[in-house]
Length: 321
Image (cartoon, rainbow, N blue to C red):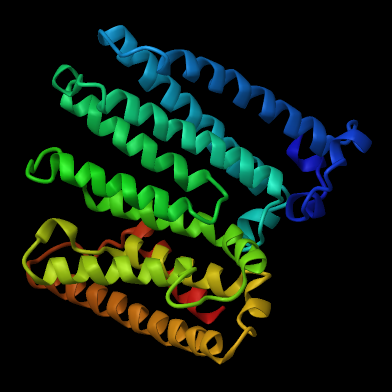
């Protein structure tokens, strides 16, 4: 079934319990049935792999291949929804239906189980380090395509474990791109966060911290680490732009405006996030200016990095929205 045949309302409305019973011939139900069948296949193969301790390179290869398959499966959701007349791509703040939230969560969670199985069965000394690093990165990447309120948190936990494992090795330790992966996962969680909050009620005593707060917090940590002397974790334009995207999608979430009316503290949060977002934009512009001047002083080329300016322009557009 072509994704283009699906009505945009199908992507953003919750299913009734009997949706598939009464509309089993609809394009969306056929699409979902295909996804569900593929998840069952991957889950069955994973349960089989989880039933025994990896003994050799072939067993490890099976686990790595399953993790790759789960990532391809999860990315297909984003690809399919983005192909829907650009609606989902331009409006990622709209929450998906519960069915998509659940199936992407289950797939990402199974990828995490495979990572644990690979690294926690007393076989770490047998796993090539680069293979293990790749496994951590794939487990993180899975959450960047899971439409779940906890996607960013789950991804960040994996990053912390990865850092504990290889933090002292300059060749294997987490890179800036790994932190960007966490921001992408927080961005994906925006679309489901306020649907969860609608059920649980307003934020109380620090609970239900928004994806925007978490993204800006991570950016502050990286800036502090860089200021303290870590030259490898200096936030780049891509990091700034993604953090601002998380703020935008948190505040534009179609439930968000209503949720922010719970009490005055929520309205204050909206203003604080907006102000900090413009502060982050200024930081990014200052960084770009300094890098350009430094490059010019060293006799570098005036050639423009298209990708860099793409992120810069997107960051400005997100702040305006």
